[in-house]
Length: 146
Image (cartoon, rainbow, N blue to C red; front, side, top):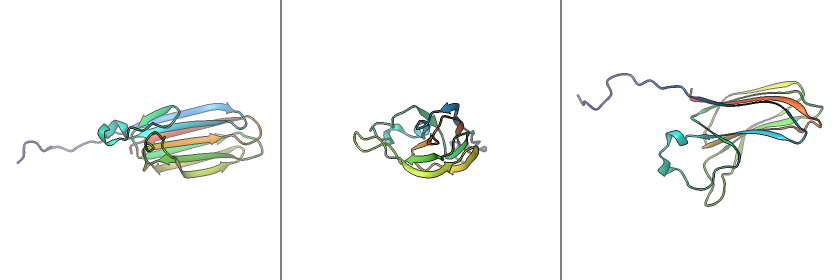
């Protein structure tokens, strides 16, 4: 028997990272959460050296993304968008985000995205209030390992 092989069960430790907002969002304003998935578990030599996306970046280990949002807005709808980027951009360019999920929220609406699988390096969730008036918005974005 090889003495270098593990003789017991390997236990995976769960991981979760979150960003939460509970604030009045002005008409035309946005709130946003950006997660970098995998930097903490990837060999840095495999990552590109081009710039990261702009904004506050939260480091996380995926692959599951959960989003819940409640919007007390006006008459018009407000988009809640989940984007992913495959990696950093080419050369001096930041990564290009692509839409994964979107819903146009109406007044007093609760939206829940459960277990979206993150297959890119970055995940971004953006809520934009286009309702015509400031609105209390509660947004929670959670990245978890299982």
